[in-house]
Length: 178
Image (cartoon, rainbow, N blue to C red; front, side, top):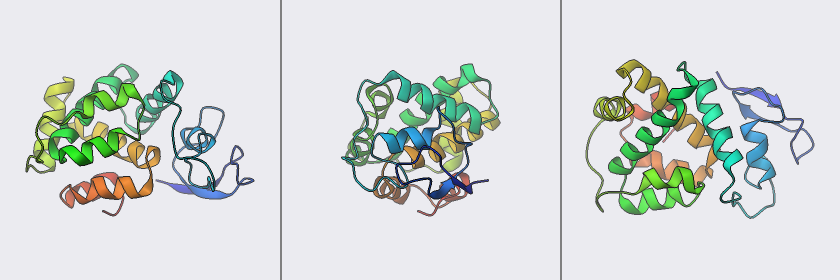
């Protein structure tokens, strides 16, 4: 459950923000902020350092902490979730989302068609399960972790745009308003 924590690595002097992770040197929220994109990064260009493998590793580590799945399943779950998300979003929205992620995470977001495919959460979970080779329960937890990590990784506006293209039952999974 997300709680307000004082971030010692904050450029804002240790301001409180909503976060479900314990802050430390590998903190996803703190790294995001140091790149000029965090919850209290007042100034900054909003761009992540492209090609930064440590950012992708931090993203995957966050997925592993948030989903009760073994670490070796984080990458396949992430790829499967992003590929399925690309099918569910319009091509333009998938491209907008990809533009805020590093190369390793944007590659699965190539939309196969310009239009979004109309399917719900259950079909989304089934597609992720098949692609990642995991059980539907593991896929559901992976999707939950992936979407909540995306919420932290991209701008608030971009995440709202993504959620606006998904059925309302996705809101309950990620715990965020559309």
